[in-house]
Length: 343
Image (tube, rainbow, N blue to C red; front, top):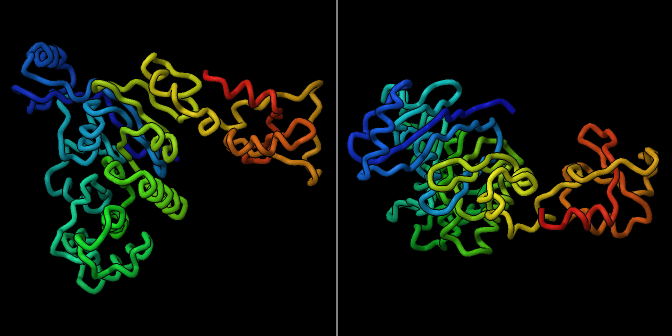
């Protein structure tokens, strides 16, 4: 997957004189802003890249700067210093007309608050972005209908938000974004207002949609379980700074900051670690017969929780293979038990 979004040494300071974008090389002016106690640092020197086609979760508690970072990606907020680039273009340097075109053609946003028009039907709400873009009514309603059917609301096209549950309203918000068919989907705490069971259903739906058509999804969350479940990679933020960025497995097994270790201390390792990360070379270097269909084989990306019953039922070490069908190593019950201890 190629790089789609790059965030370079981004700062965002709210307060006196901070509305002026500080150009590269003006570190002294940045220091002056920081010395002013009336100013608040929301994002502090963050650099990261987001790959095309991945679900990238920005996670942190309230006040960590994650939502501010999201709004700098679509240009709703300009950085005080640094740059946000999409396909090599600096968002803050775009003229207003190009910025509007970027938002309409390249990205869509799903909000925590649903942001539906109460007087409009589900169909008209889902078609709203296409209406703003100037698409003819018949065409936009057909696109909206298809999107609503995909999120499970094909029988609720003409119901208004007050007639829909919270989960159904969020599905309308997601359908509105999908109708635009954007390559970038920005989701700001999109599921946090939902009940746990409905929230899990929405996570399942997002993963299903991603399997069907890979978009670049930037997903803001304060829930670690959610981040681990849906994120290809996770950027963990605290007090405006980036603590660490990587897969859930990397952050759990190789935390580079005490705060990262503390965040992940309650995570079930079996739901995060894959067998490819713990596979060991077999005793005496003997490679098992991978052609024997009577014996189990595990793929490297299989999570430990899925591998446990397979390994428990096996009478000998279970081989692990890569996506290319190459032999990586074996896992045993003892290997699993060691790996399930808190890192």
